Picture (tube, rainbow, N blue to C red):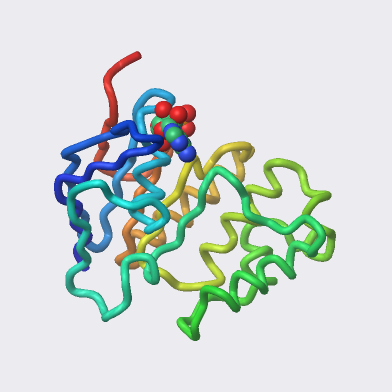
Length: 201
Ligand SMILES: Nc1ncnc2c1ncn2[C@@H]1O[C@H](COP(=O)(O)OP(=O)(O)OP(=O)(O)O)[C@@H](O)[C@H]1O
């Protein structure tokens, strides 16, 4: 599988956020997107996920099945996208049903256990701490197998142990042939190329 971005340009509110951006990633490769606040890191991830239109340029995925890039992608944005009135496990069950399509993710309860959330699985997700909410959001990565992971500040609010766990989960995904593009200001301890957006402030 090869994900290629060629001369991408994205506009928001009539303003060019970035332009002429190109990169390519093969199976088992990662890209860390860095840059100052407002440089366009989240914008790039949202455009790759199909949530924002490209003003110019082209995205292509070679060597995969017929599904679109969006269908092969997990996008974890800044927002944890948990429904507060549903329990944590119900949130994961919703995402598994929405995303899995029979492609062999692990059970929601197992994904929560992996992220150390077994003891809060039956609480309404609104009761979780910030780091617990982030871990529940990241557990979505495991309930549906999708090769491309787009992660926006994945380690925000995570304690040291959870950061190490997430590092191991990302490393396992990459060694299994997955692709990761992560936007962050933090050090991710991921063997990755770097794409820096924007000029220094
Ligand atoms: N809906 C919108 N309409 C207009 N401009 C927007 C919109 N959403 C974001 N922007 C602008 O796009 C630019 C890039 O924002 P983005 O969130 O991609 O930056 P970022 O690099 O992820 O920043 P940070 O490090 O703060 O998370 C910012 O200047 C922001 O104000």
